[in-house]
Image (tube, rainbow, N blue to C red; front, side, top):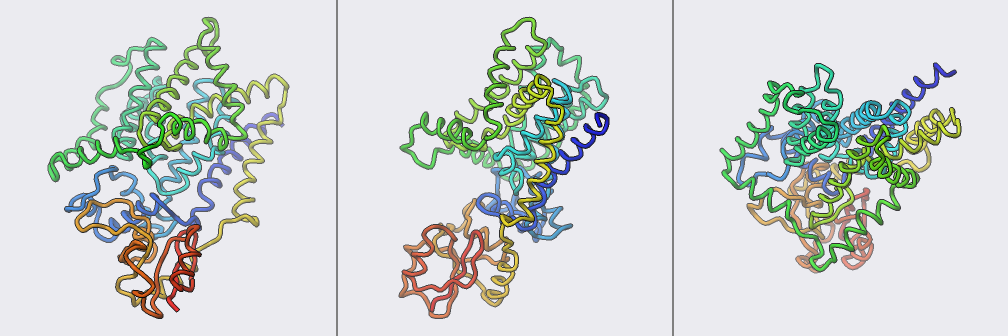
Amino acid sequence: MGNLKKPLELWFLALATCGILLLDAPINELHGTAVFYASLVRELFDNGYLSIFADERAYFLKPPLVLWLSTASAKIFGLTNFGVSFVPRVAGVLCVALCYLMTKKLFDQRVALFSSLVLITNSTFIQFSATLRMDSMLLLGGLISVAGWLYRDRTWSSVAIFAGITIGVLSKGPLGFAPIVLILIHSVLFKVNVTQTINWRWFVLLGPILFWYGFLMATHGTAPFVDLSNDLAKPAADANANLFIETFREYIAKPAGRYLPWLPFMLIGGVLGLRHSFSDDHRYQKIMRWLILWFALVFVAAAAKPDKDIRYLYMGLPVLSMLAGYVLAKIEHRFKLHWMGIALCGFIFVLPLAYNFGPYRETDTRPTIEAMSTKIATTETPVVIGGYPIPAGQARRQNTHRDWIYFYLNKEPRVLAWSQISPADMTKGEGYFLTNNRSHEARLAEYRLTPKFKTTEMVYAIRE
C-alpha cells in the first residue's frame, strides 16, 4: 500500500487541479474585467493581432501575451467561455505543478503535496485563475524563473530564469521582473554568486520584451508609459477612504474569512517560519527567511497601491501554501497519520465533481445567450441602460455593459446612463439591456419593462 499511496496522491492531486480549474470553463459566464479582456480577444480575433494596440484608441495597460494566446485558443475552441479562458486556466494548473516542484526542492515531497493541495483550494487563487485574467500567467512566469534558480544545477536553469521573466512581463507588465528580486535575495541568503551561476547567453530570451516596448514607443512615443504610470498610481474608488482601514479590510480581514480552512495552518506556519529564521541551528533557517521576505514584499507592494484588492496578494499565495503545507506535513509525521495525504487528495478530487455535476452546479446560461443573440439579430445597435457612455476617441477601457454585449452577442451597443433616458423616451415593443444586479427589479417596474431573457450578468427586457 505504501508504494501505491504516493502515485495515487499525485494522480488525485493532478485530477483535482484540472477539475477545479477546467471543469466549469464551458458554462462559467464571464463578468467584470474578464469580459472586458474577452471583448479585446474578439476584436483581435476579427481584426488581427495588433488591431487593439496600433490605432488611435490603442490599449496600453496590459502587454499582449495573454490576449494573443487566448485569441489563438479561441481560433481552436471558438469564441466561447472555454475558448477565451483556456490559457489562464491552464496557466493556473501549471502554477500548482511548479509549486509542488519548488516546495519539494525546498523541503520534501510531503510538504510539496500538502502545499499544492492548499494552493488549489485557495479561493483567491481559483477566482483569478479560473477566468480570463492575467494573474495566473504572471505567477506562472515568476515561478518558472524562481524554479530555474532553485534547480540551478540543471542544464535548463538559465533558460527558465530568463524565459519566465519574459512570460511574466509580457503577461502583466513590469511586475514580471519581480523574480529578479526574489533570486537576488535567495542568492544573498545562501551565498551563491549570481554572475557565475547563471548562463548569461540566455539573456537573449528577454528580447521579446525589448521588441514589444520598442514597438509601442515607435508607434505611440511615450504615451504607453504615461498611461501605465497613471494606472499604477490610480487612486482608490473612494477618495475619502482611510488607507489603513482599507489595507486591514482587504489584506487581513478578507483573507481571514476566505482562506479557511487553511488559515490556522498558514498562521502557525508563519510563526514557525519566524522562529526557524532566528534559530542558527535549524536546517530551514534560510529557506524560511526567504519565504517570509517574499510574502512581506508582496504584502508591502499591495498595501502601497492606492486602490486595494485582495488579488494583489496572489503572487504571495505560493508562500502561504508552503507554510501551511509545512505544518500539515509535521502533523502527519508527528501523529503518524499515514492516511492524511491520500484522504485530503481524495476529498479535494471529489469537490469539483460534486460542484460541477451536483445540485449546486452553476446555471448554464449559454442557451439564454443564444436566444438573446437570435432576438436581436436584426437590431443594428442594441441599447443598454445603466452603464457609462463611452466618449468618442477614448482609449479602450473596461465598460462591462458594452463589453458583455460585444463579446457574447457580437454587437456594438449604445450605452446610456439611467439619467439619459426616461419611460417617455422608450418605444413600445423595443428591447433594452440592463445589468442583472440588485436594483434591476425596481428599474424594470419603474420603466414598465418585462424581462424576456436573464443571464448571470445581463437582463434583456421589452417595453410593454
